[in-house]
Amino acid sequence: MKRITYISQLAPEVRREALAGIARVAAGHNAAVGITGVLVAVGGFFFQVIEGPADRIDALMTRIRADRRHRELRILACEEGVAARLFPDWAMRPVDLDAASDDVLRPIRVLLERLAHSHAVIQRYTQPAVMRILERGLDPLSVPLRRRERVILFADLVGFSRLVERFPDEAIAGMVTRFIDICDGRVAAAGGEVSKVIGDCVMAFAPREQTDAMIAAALGILGDLHRCRTEAVDGRAEACLRCGIGLSLGAVLEGNLGSQRKSDYTVLGDAVNVASRLEAISRTTGRALILSAPVRAAARQSWPFVALGCHPLKGKSEPQELFTLNDPLIDDPELLHHRV
Image 1 (spheres, helix red, strand yellow):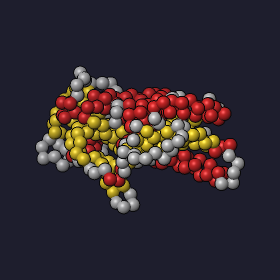
Image 2 (cartoon, one colour):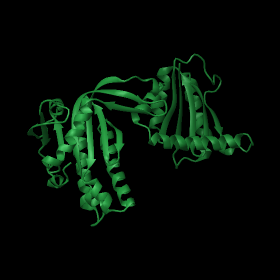
Image 3 (tube, helix red, strand yellow):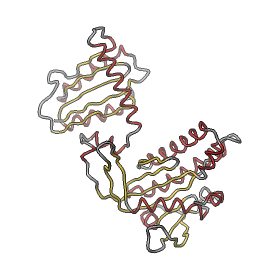
């Protein structure tokens, strides 16, 4: 059997009084397919445990994810190979802690409310890859490093040090937040994820199969930044939002690295170093997007590639063939004024 524990927020349009009806319908369905569990409602959150045959639990979770009464669903635990049920007699038992007045239940209600909020905050700081491991019922700390083929994206704001000197702290924070939000949104839509944010630099990765999507994501980032500049009020920090991007492809080690106190799920290897070097070359070429030869070879769409010749890269014994795209978003002479 399989057991899943999850938390979700109740959609604003769903009244708390509807809890009993929701549980009644769920109990009827669960009883018919051999699923048991409990639903705890508190402070606009649902805590739910469901257990039963693995295929039926998976089907139920698919339905729950699509249910608009739930928002921001997060898996807390996923257990495979469960031998015994925790709630064998409850097809779906509702527990409404908001209606409880008992002196014992009141602190439990407060505790669960704080737990729900803390988990939502922690998830904001946790990489999607780690959350996916948790949803599979595994301990992320036990997942070993594995060799994978990954597309690596490095994006770095142009002239950041000068901007810090020019604009107040609040404006810099807003500008960097906007930049990270754009990168994260475009990378996630491409099937990748942001691995690190180091000041004004974003590192992201995606499977090799997403090479074309990551090229499109890079163009999307440049397009979004262009719109920010054109729509910004004169004198605002957003009018200076521009970046260089490097895209590489190759074998990396992906997984956990760290100490007993701090661990990080990351990627490392030559492809990561190359992407960083390519981003820096955008400053000497005036091209906002630089691609490695393996990226060009892996692409399946008809991109307007432009050869930039061979360039020396730190750590490489031979000059490397580099490419860009023939696109107006990429031609940015302003980059030449910010050589690194």
